[in-house]
Amino acid sequence: MERPKEEKEYSFNDSKKINRRLLLGSVAASAVIALVKTTTGQLVPAAVPKHVSVPPDPTKVQGPPPGALGTRSPFEQLAKKTSDTSSRTPLQSLYGVITPSDLHFERHHGGVPVIDPTAYKLVIHGMVKRPMTFTLNDLKRFPSASRIAFLECSGNFRSGKEEMTPQEICGLTSQSEWTGVMLSTLFREVGASPKATWFLAEGSDAAVMTRSIPMSKGWNDAMIAYGQNGEALRPQQGYPARLFLPGWEGNTNVKWIRRIEVSDQPFMTREETSKYTENIKDGKIRQFSFDMDARSIITFPAYPVQLDKGWVEIKGLAWSGRGKILTVEVSVDAGKKWYSATLQEPVLDKAHTRFRFLWKWNGHETEIMSRAIDETGYTQPTLQQLTDARGNDMGGYHLNPITAWAIKRDGRVLFKPEKWK
Amino acid sequence: MLLLLLTVVFIVSCKDKQEDEMIVYNKHAAKRQHADSVINVKIITEMPPTFDIGRKATSAEINEWDIDVRADGKGLPEGSGNATEGKAIFTQKCAACHGKDGEGGAYARLVAAMGDTVKTKTIGNYWPWSTTLFDYIRRTMPYNMPGSLKDNEVYSLTAYLLYRNKIIDSSKIIDARSLPGVVMPARKYYVNDDRRGGPEVR
Image (cartoon, rainbow over all chains, first blue to last red; front, side, top):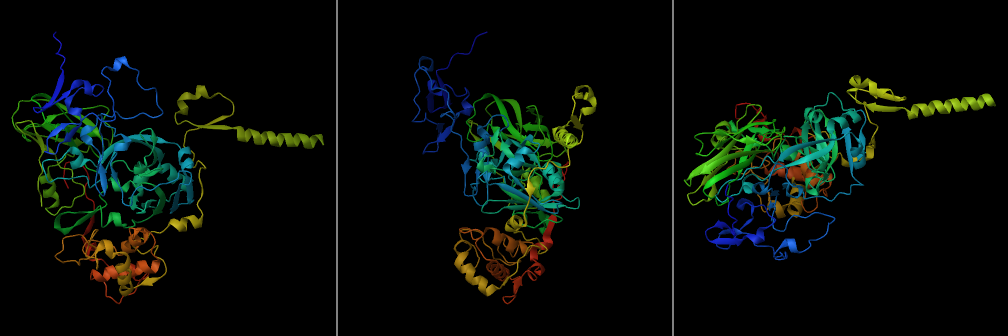
């Protein structure tokens, strides 16, 4: 069998070439190389970082010795996309299902507080037999649990123009392995009243963020998490401890948690009344919309990728706040026919699930899209189905429409924004 | 004397024995009895009711943080305020972000009465509970000095914003008794989430 010829150069588009030697050490696929925009709007591969000296032959010089901390390759230019209120995970640049902790999306309401872990405490009071205070060490002494689950902001939908990346459209979802003490363990410790129906979770940021959470969630699978991907939580994710509610809208997962008050009614805080509620039909406003419905997005090929004719592995993520992903279906003909994608095992409950679908692109214009189906039988809707169900005045929370990418004849991949207002 | 010594030794050894007793939690213990022949190990198959970790919370530390105000008014402090005083405080501490009279600026518009042509969600046309105003203003406003307002100032700002949104008269005194009774125009539109998974899109 003839081996493929060693290529001297990779081509990214017709006008730009890059010397292969500069790319040694990065994964040998054109799709993973960072692209940057020139002043004329042209996409070209990111140049070799200036401070990196690349030897002509790495087998002829000793490399640096072992270090105290590992570092990302300087060739990998990963970054969150920031705005005044949030920063978004570069979904299109990631492999597998775990979000590197420093790329986990951020959304906070009073900045990131600095909390001394030795001074940290969590107070649980209200309808409990024993109001108690726990230090961080106390929390770590309790039986612990770990689970891999996504966390998604319920405002995770942007649209409006063709030149949008997965990160810009839906980068407010990330996944980690979370470790902590189950809230049920703490509820038993304080003797939470069986008559209690809601609890208030309060953060120690400048917003002193509060949300009311049903006790049933607290007893079921809520966690006070102090670990993320093998280390302590990142400050941006609530260091030293946060509430983690698998499958529920990000805002309820109160970070930097300092207080839990057990009660028999919701508190009607600002974040669960004037925010994180959505207009639906007949002038109604929907409140306490906790569960994140099933969603998926193709992260490759997606804007700004320049697609080459031939075999393409379509890749993406699917997830549901209501359980496991059952199936992801992919269409390569603008939604006329749908085929099952391959899911990467293990498929976890309330977790980002990687899907893949092999397709040979013949160079014709088309649209590709994916839809997630979860174990409750829910199928990710189109935007039209959402407006049919909620009305044209529907609010911006809990929007999980099918995302379509238009493939142009010249290989450009563009987001297909849809209007509903 | 000897008897006394023996008694002491006996008591001490009993105590030691009790403290030395090892307890292990193993919910599968029944299947693994053969491994449990070690002396002085008690196996429990239910989690202990408590782990005796943590300490009793003091009233002082609870009171320091327990600043929430429920929709029924529980948690509202002593004190009172009115719209006139509220306007003065608003001008000084809030107008820079929210506009001269709450009509919006660099940050959110706060004022637009229900039925107004304004599309923005405001206290007047969207907020369902009046108590939320007090709770939120007290816990986190103003942005540059969060949590710095005195209770009377918060009552006055609450009164001013309710007045500006045409929900109360300018003369109404807002305090722990009157605030929970202020019914917000938007409350009647609020419904609980009815999404349930399954085939239906809601």
